[in-house]
Length: 148
Image 1 (cartoon, rainbow, N blue to C red):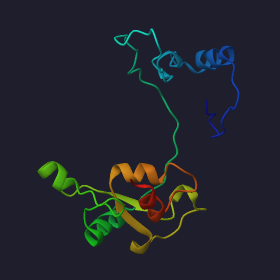
Image 2: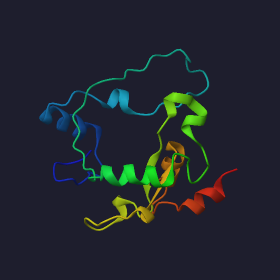
Image 3: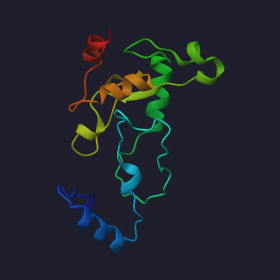
Image 4: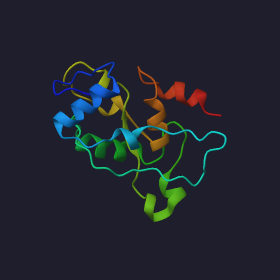
């Protein structure tokens, strides 16, 4: 659970969690939020509650849309890690789609900084997620090496 000041409570008993939910007017999200692993004897047709609207405080980094547009124009629309091209795979639906990745991720920087085209790459959604799976983020070369 995250506090208004951005800090996280590391240990929170279920009783304390319920008290905080009541105090903040948040409906019981704990029932549908945990991952369930199906084990032996569990009903594969069981229904799980989802879709409860919840309020969340979130911090994000401002991104420069012009940098993204210029990166796509400069590098094209083929992933620089795995060579996947959305238009080749999806036709018209995938035309012009690719994600822009900061080689020095914003979350790992101190403060606001300028970014050049040489400091970004274009990657497919899967490679983008894999690059950020570790902290510090993997390099393009490290991810290329891990492809099988």
